[in-house]
Amino acid sequence: MQDDDEKRVAIVGMSLRAPRGVADVDAYWEAVRNGTDLVTELPQERRAVFGAEWDGMVTRGGYLSGAFDFDAGFFQVSPREARVVDPQQRLLLEVVWEAFEDAAIVPADVAPAAGVFVGVSGQDYRRWFTGEPSAHWTAGNGHSFAAGRISHTLDLQGPAFAIDTACSSSLVALHTACRSLAAGDCDTAVAAGVNLVLAPWTTLALDKTGALSPEGASRPFDAGANGFVRGEGCAALVLKRLADAVRDGDRVIAVVDGSAINHDGRSSTFAAPNPRAQTRLISSVLTSLALSATDIGYHEAHGTGTQLGDRIELEAIKTALAGGRLYVGSVKACLGHTEAAAGLLGVIKAALCLRHRRIPRQPHFDRLNPGVDLAGTGITITGQEEPWPPDAGDRASVSSYGMSGTNAYVVLSPAPDAALDVASDAARDAAPDAGADARPGPAVSGFAVSARAPGALRALAGRYAAHLAGTGSAGYPAFAYTASHGRTRHEHTVWVDADRPGAAIPALHAVAAGEPHPAVTVLDPAQPLPRPPAAVRRAVATLPTYPWQHGSYAVRPIGATG
Image (tube, rainbow, N blue to C red):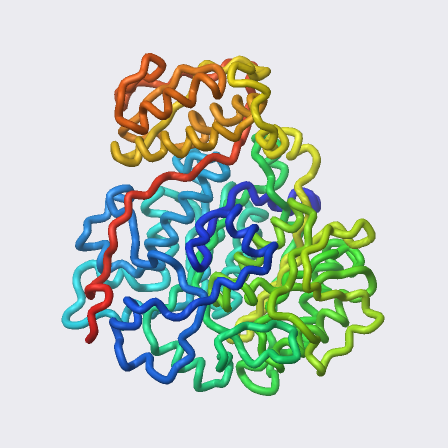
């Protein structure tokens, strides 16, 4: 029998896209902790594509900026093919790449045993097509290709498949990835989810069910809740077995202690939730982990904002998790319901709550759903941000319930001290330099800046310069190591010979301006990078992500009617 610690899975990298231009984890945390409403009206250029077909519908939602943007050149996709590929697949490629960068793992280094598990359910882009399909149409729009394209593009050779259980898809993908790691099917896994609202058909179908809020606002758990708004998003996690992550010096963001999935069985209607199934699912995971309800301090609920669904879910939470001090929230109040991506966006929120030891406020919550009584349960839905209470459990959990009837539940715990000691950079980078010439502890000879195109190289150098301006000298070795050895080497590479931030910043400004500098050496593609001193162990710093060189690709001109 496998040791419990061997079943635990480390989240070592994560990346996302959320509505209204939220494109990184820090911006997401700021939006979530402040309870920012990211819901807007449907962008006019998208409405114009289908014209009057949108009329009379609830079109407020959480929409991504630049949903059709893609760096086709980076991924070696021709413009002709890029136009045909579902923007969801294109978005996944960029977000998964960023998750590997966040983990400081070069995909090629783990490729032989890396698996990909993608939650995806939308097929709106099919409705953009007119006339005969092209040779790229099938691979560009089938669900299975959402996972296969990632594996093909990054040469990842472990298991790869897409999962569609509707709203629970991405949390089921995370559960499946963890099982694959535990079974030894792969040593590194990507769990991802994506959702884009690109055509009116699904919105119309949901509107017919009465699930959408007529006022265009999601109010989970509130007495005034009257449905949800649709949301767009993408999230990706890079996962490893916890023991492997600690051994390899990875920065562990949070730990997946355990997970499970089940089905509602025969509920009152096919799409209706089953409180008994939800309760059994939560209880089964806690039992398998030898935990009690009091070990969970925060629960990220499915929480769509429908009267029936919220009431059933809160009753299940009461039955399975009451007993200690428990905060409950739902990020859907900020984003809308991001459907296939919702579970992982909830996991990232929960992981950030664990990292920052904060409970975000629940927006759009004034008065509890009158069908639920939480008195004496210890369960709180808070309208203001609060510190994680010392008398609450130290773990978080996340639920996703699919309209298909498939449910998923995950328990997370903070990164263990060993992993924090090996790779955490937060405390080191938080302190500004004592002086421009202050020297870091370990000897650092410099670092690489590398990109696939000259314009991207200049942009990345500028991002690195801005980042180093706020980085303490003690964090410089981790920065240099991550930039040189935690990022993929591309065709265009320069070496910055600098032993401290004060020396590196002007050199980076020169690279960004396309100008020579005595500390900058242009490397040939085959020329090896200088290696770090043997005494410098692997160190992971959070660096700016790759600067995508976007073009806009669609089979119809954006904004054209008909």
